[in-house]
Image 1 (spheres, rainbow, N blue to C red):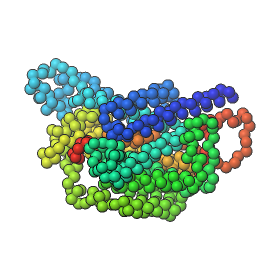
Image 2 (image 1 turned 180 degrees about the vertical axis):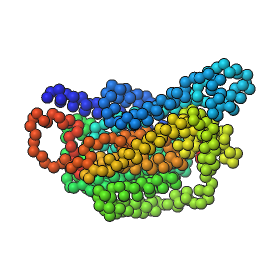
Image 3 (image 1 turned 45 degrees about the horizontal axis):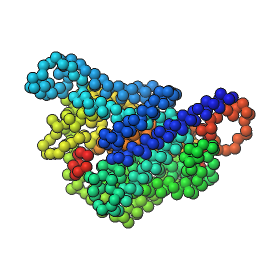
Image 4 (image 1 turned 90 degrees about the vertical axis):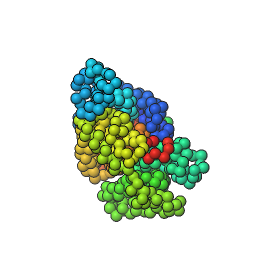
Length: 503
């Protein structure tokens, strides 16, 4: 019995450490231009190392992952390393897309006796490979968290989204003279701490369905809320939300939802606003069967109307200008897509090297653009152009596993707070995946980390999902049976310039 309590205490301590490290990373990620600069990115990579080291020391997270998921993650981590392996130049020059570069090397008098990696810019591929560490660590840690810690991490994520939304509204209201514009190139823009409004919108559109899901969970639950058990100060602080009375919880998540929606509207991101609308619609449909369809639709409609009314009071004219036909037609993304696809097929199936898009696209860029293009504005095209066939396989595998996860998630007849969180995370993944067709949010470190967090929540195995609620009184068990319940898992009642193509 004593050994059981000891193991439970050790597991609780490890979980608390994971929560602390993960929360620190989630809070820091967007604060310095979304992490899209070398220094903040290096800090996040260093913060990811103890998380990965802890996972290797406690490899129990492997049991939460199916083999196809592990294979896809392994391939995602392995193929950039393969692109860095050197090969004889006689072989390298015959790889697809290398003819021009081989001719240039020969023009400078270099012989064909050297060794060259698959990547055309190895240093950039190495840097991009290291940038994958924080999202990978967040994904693996989140999947392995215990249920209560997982909920707390989601609250941290929503807190950061609300902070960014409120900051964006302050920036909008303060105009160009406000002291809350943290980046020198964002005059006249609503960006939070990011450098691009589309990247701010990417964060908010991921958070919106989860905020609405938590609100729906409070509306759909019965009255009363249990006290959060335990003496640990960290659990007491993080359990503040669950100790609030139901009306206060409803008001809290209502405020979160409205703030995030307003921040999304005033980001003036066309794609972001459309993804937010899709997220609200999907939330009404998927939450409806557990609240009563009319009840859920009414809930979404009420808050959408409230948000639009507040937006109208603040001023929607600048937002609507973004949807004007002239502004939409001036967008050169379609030209970038077509030329990027041409580059993709030229380098397929080996790719040009992870992170090398800015270095190779100049050969294909049409003269009509006339500006430096550092991303394809389509994460999938860019990823496959750089990674080749392995990147395409990784994308397909994750899409299939995402689709296969939904039936088991929706099958349960009794939904608690975690189930609403997971469905909201799944919707957030979907809208970000759609947004990635027209932007490069997943190349922004902060949003890549948040995307990985939602994936961890979505694929987390909820052992109690689909069972009857456990908040009813039960007969006390004998002392020999009590140690099998961990203190952490005690049930809690669910009641830089004006260039649009480069940063």
